[in-house]
Length: 544
Ligand code: GAP
Image (tube, rainbow, N blue to C red; front, side):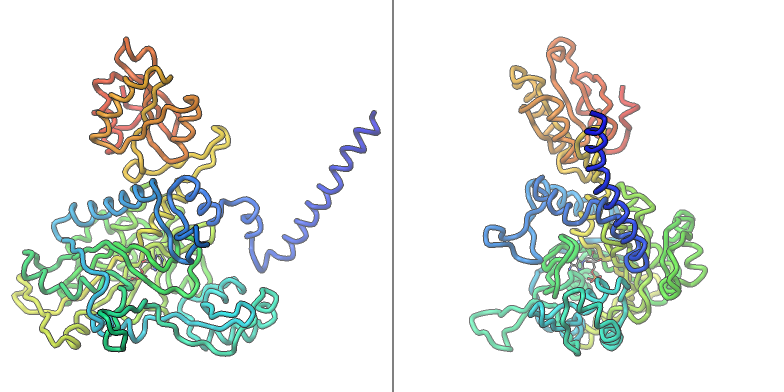
């Protein structure tokens, strides 16, 4: 018997021991190349896991799946469309309706092709393409270099990328690439034809950014919408880019949504009247150009200090703060956010300075927001190409000017991915996933459950009342524990259970998603309590 136990445990222990030792040896020898990514590989919730979760819970589906999918395109499901709308509404409420100095527009997806010639997109909105004979297609050169050599390639030109590829030819071979010795530029704009003829004269483009419609309408808005400098114009809508290698789920798609603001300022106005003490004291994590060149990590600094050190101007700092704060206020942890300064050699053709807000995804720190100083580039280009005078009168200085522009540009899909990753919590104790989305963003705000089917009619009455104010979910199937778990998994912040006692005491149980705490409250006060909870006026602990 003793022998049997020893034999059984040994037969298990030996392979276990050997596997552990092998993993430690692999780790020892690969640390220099891939840091600790293998550990993450075994442990972390990956972008692929997120795509699977999003499909299973009706957030996001691969487009045209019945035909095998369509790379770079995604459809939003029942919950995804709610979440997406909530994110857009939160941006719109905060940055348009909540301000007196920003107005919105809703422009077309296709516009006059000259718009894109003037903006520089026809000439230079391209990525670097390299042909791989193993894959039998062109691939994005910078992405392959990042993937194989584990280096950042921001700002590297074709020559520098080719040099890295040649110097590390063996590594690319091992990684399964057989690459050409030349890199070409590939324009990312989708082309279409207007009208029945399909010639060069009828070519038009699907907009690759929402910004240009704002520039072309700028003067009209200034003349008709009672705006005065400094002020902003916002737009939310689709943008299209024929990405060479769409990847990382919603992160890099061919069709996506942007929420962009072009904020117009008198070019002489260097000081920002809105950059006051709270903005100056606001602390951010920053990866400066110097950090990137010296291979140093990001550090914390106040925006006031950044401006004093001339890392950026006041208006630029002001707008970065608004979005950084937006993410913090909607549940993103400070340690998962940082700013990254664009290096001089990676700036887009229109920008003289640019800072990204980056989020720490499982696949690394990645851009979720770009805030560029576009200067007078776009308006000057449109003046040149349209031969229209787009100067405007500044009432403060009583002079005509071509304004300069700060552009906060937000991808809606990347914001969604950020909120989903931050919210996702695989709660082992509870035994289910808890999606801790901020109540403003959560697709459903309230779940209403009758304890048993017999109580359905009474519970429905409560549901009908609550759904007037909030998007609610009615669930009567399965045990109450199972229903709570289902609600947790799709991020419902509060659940209401109508039980037998409710008939007599005219009360229900309200359960808090994040703590699982429960309280008994009068049905007559339910709407008010939920309203206060969802708007952040009160916390669950304070509910009486
Ligand atoms: N108007 C400036 C502009 O479009 P950008 O850095 O190219 O600047 C702004 O894009 C934001 O749009 C990015 O920070 C990102 O959130 C989003 N975005 C850009 N390309 C994207 C893509 N292929 N898929 C999803 N989101 C994208």
